[in-house]
Image: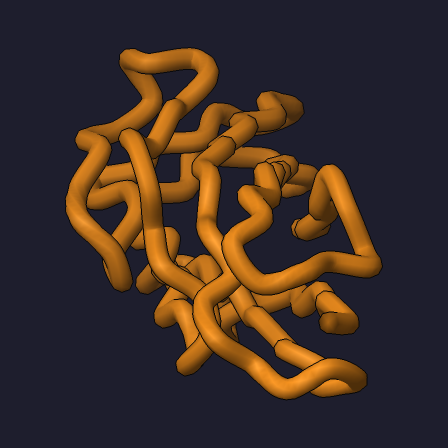
Length: 116
């Protein structure tokens, strides 16, 4: 799993696109949930996009995708846009996404840090 952003250095009011990719390296199908609880200072704007769209059901934040099915060897991509909201200059905003599935021993996650 990986999480990236269109920008690292941001300012208040700026929009940033996040991209999350999850790859199933295992021998079988994995069903789970992808979440991303946005921290203070970030607001979801617009919709959540899932590629391929048939891989799951797009939901509302903090649950980005429910019933997410990833075939062995398949990679899914989720994108969404946030707006930076009223933070002090120099502040750092850590944002973490998490994928959890019954077939996994523990949830997997990745974070990205924005600097205001």
